[in-house]
Image 1 (tube, rainbow, N blue to C red):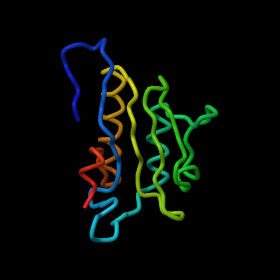
Image 2 (image 1 turned 60 degrees about the vertical axis):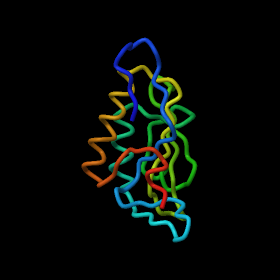
Image 3 (image 1 turned 45 degrees about the vertical axis):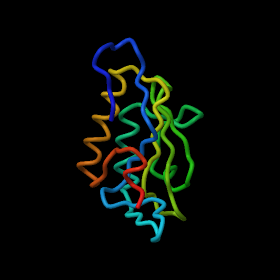
Length: 131
């Protein structure tokens, strides 16, 4: 991930990011995707503790992660997170930083790093999950 340390006053601009299991393969060209399940409960707790809420302002709940495309914003409303699910299987999050400060982005990436240690996930550019 690219975080420029030169100035904290400029917002962070990132490419498309995905948080998924370390073995996940999304949209594989020749093969079917590999979508290991992630813990909805642990993910929801981490997002809620980091201040993520749904579009109506309610904290993230594990049940909301069952549905593909459910959207959440951080406290500053500069990072959009969207659930990735197939059927009822929750397998990841699409993460779109729109313009967080470097401090806010560092807090969010730290949260994803800690969550990744607990659920065997990683936050990485979407291209790294393609087969």
